[in-house]
Image (cartoon, rainbow, N blue to C red; front, side, top):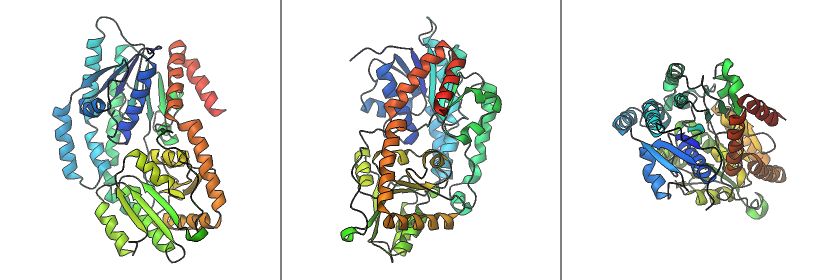
Length: 436
């Protein structure tokens, strides 16, 4: 293996581990790829160690420094899980308080490592992806890259019942992080802030917008999600319209609206829906499907490994994500990589990804509007299959050009070098290139 060359990197990824959830997967992608290209030291939580060890870590010649705050994180998570049994997002918000304990300990460990001379040229904190979790690693005297962040997403109008089931009343607790950040100075002392959405930038004080560079926090592994020819068009030789959803079965994902849309279309056409994933609403969704008479039309697979997820996506004509508050949208990138058109609600992360070239964005005005939008879109797919097939092919091209993980990491390494040479010029050039 070629020895890594380039800036010496301190990577602080609170969440980092394959197969541990979407944000942890993001941290793992950053670490596993950067460690093969640069001299890298990873700071991460000790809870990630089993998954990293199982994946063969440390990667390459990198070092890993584990930060142990389980004395605080463990009890906090157990209490939150008991209080919010149906809302994974609420559990996540409460449990995230552990990050501030982690960050303090991570800074102490990094300082101890640097007493004989600073072993790093630059620091990067890719996870958590929240702008309320700005690290204090700038106190090491290093240039610091934050993000990509994805946050400050508001509440879409018209989905009161869905958001109540997801304990949305707790969302404003996130604003306490602004106080912590102001005291710690993470945003204030950043060299560059990578931001995934317009909403994220809007939530950062305007005086720091000059530090912001647009970078989507998610990426896609093109080898894991390869393209495949579109299935036989629906209606040809009795071929049913095939839909697929992938995600956690939690309230804000809106799977119930997708079931309602399928039920409306059953009298008109043969249709099949595959639901990939699991979660606290699994039982309720099974009951809803049965109540709507969809036993033959809907198949629940539970959780699947990525290659099997990719196979289910490729078997479908279209990918549907009726999530009403999706901050990211990694599954949309995976569907696009498989060359499938995508349908999602025009709010949050999906609004940054979907346009008429690759799919359709539904109005975020309420459940009935989403259901009617799904029904209309699926009818259009049956009437105009060639247009939708072309949207899938356009999605694959976009995934290759913008969202492939290797391309994203290569671009970030170039950014590190430019920031070390001249941060102001580097930020201005990057914004100009992206805007051109």
